[in-house]
Image (tube, rainbow, N blue to C red):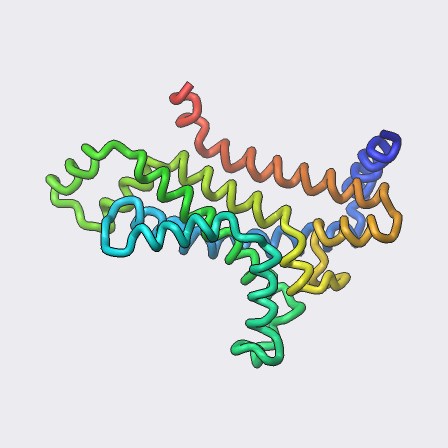
Length: 234
């Protein structure tokens, strides 16, 4: 208990003093997870909407693969990305291994199935009569998809929140492909592992509290944009 209390005050002290070491780790964490979430959303939301609105041969197989990806162990994705960018891998010439670029790729793979899967479920929950009305009014496919996504925006927002939660708290894959290099690829989760191994429990707890605070603030901001929708559903 004493370690948690001291870690809490240490976290406040580090943030108030804008400690350069901590600020650098926070900035790398937000940059990597932010870019990965944008990539996952740009791919996952349209794909989820497409799967939720259409029917085609082999759809069950595609959905089964998507659901499998939602529960895929992040460390296996880290292994896949590591091999992809290693010297013997097909993209080894890019020399992305142990850089933030490889971390972004790994986190995008982790987040993308969650965003697509939850978006598909949200779109499938939209009243089918809306789809018929849009088609009767002569809306194009792009207009129909956009209107359905707007109608299912609360579920889509949850998909983005789930994707963010999965990658901001991820440690195995980013450590495997990023290497936890100080001033370069060290993020909050890998810093917690390092400080714990070195016996700096107070600092590790501080990083943990900072991570929880950042996650709460980001989720609060995202939900703020859906305030009216939430109030209306009560």
